[in-house]
Length: 219
Image (cartoon, rainbow, N blue to C red):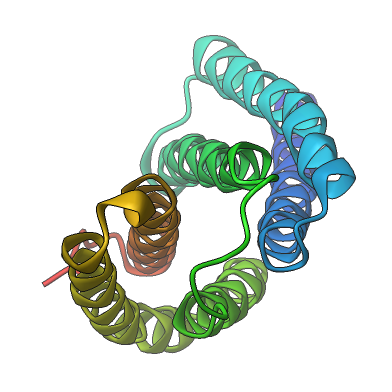
């Protein structure tokens, strides 16, 4: 009974740290995109600095997972819970890294007037923020159906990316002076697209945790 209580306490700690990570990542994406749209250098720098907190939480989650595996030797559902938390923390950390990369694009473009008003990239980011918020809720509720529904939204992310890619390539062809800025904006779209992929990964881990089955939702 004592060993089980120690194990459950460890899982509670992991769960709380994962949620902290998720909320920090959600905020980082919001701040990074706000900094880009509003050319807010101070906000962009805050995203870069605050990423350290996300990285530290990932290390804590990883260490706790390995500690529980080594000391409690979990099997079955218990092992599945730990494996899922380990994978989700890794995906969240990478999402945070992409938010940092978007913030760095703001810094690099700080002295440039945008070629045209940003329209599709902010729309793409709004959908990403919605997906991140929803996937955190689905994780808390262990909602398999919600996870599958969220993953389907990634198709729209891919459509946004394809549209932005074609538009920016045309801009670069039209005027070589715009290549630098267009390239950075294209990278921003790529970072958003990758965040969408990581959200889908988390959806897969939610399904795995709930059912024990690994399914590919990236098809």
